[in-house]
Length: 300
Image 1 (tube, rainbow, N blue to C red):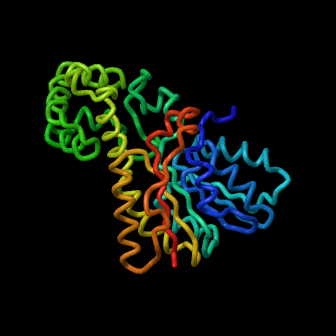
Image 2: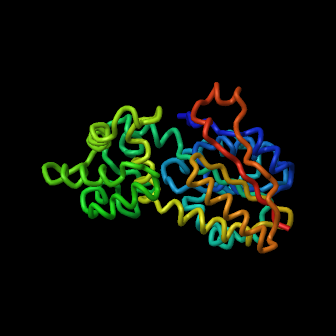
């Protein structure tokens, strides 16, 4: 079945990378292939595309769809890898790719992941409190919620979610799990709803920040972003570009600072003085795009 994942800032991505025949491009978070399809159309003939995703099911499905859609292209120049974007240097070495012209990383999680209750990504869908992109590794969120100390939980919720009620939420989690272990998204969401006052919610669901914090922690997302920022310039060709799409201030802050550090080291320049954001027309068609920001760095 075709993915319902809608790529954000698609026009801006294609324009900033200047996609043209013969380029070697990496889509480091391929998801449903929305960006990938448009990139492939523009870099062939003669180009090479490498699609990476940490979700084994999604990358397998997307590879199957894209190979079928582009069956007339040289299939040896379409590569798909089940891995994390943090492993980009290792992937390029394994695939015998010495340099690439562009790397795109869209840090938003896929609509498929949100809509699959078993993944436990959304507080709006009843399912196990899992949250892992790669379900074969790391600990699921319910293990953390049911075993970490009150102090550790509060630190996670505040650090990765900027939730002002982090300590109170952590206290309630610890009290609740003594009566009944917390295994589902609904259990946790309802607990937080009772905790966070209505007038303090700021227009978002009261569980939003806590779920964000757990997802980031479970998947080691900030560590992965840092490794991408460190390793990507090593595989970029001169004038090659790294573009990163973020969806909340914590991610954007890290990318902004990471690009500044790379520029200060003389590795390259930041081509987006301000992040590119979706136009009103895109937001109307895809409300999930409203918080997206694209920053681009170019290697010297």
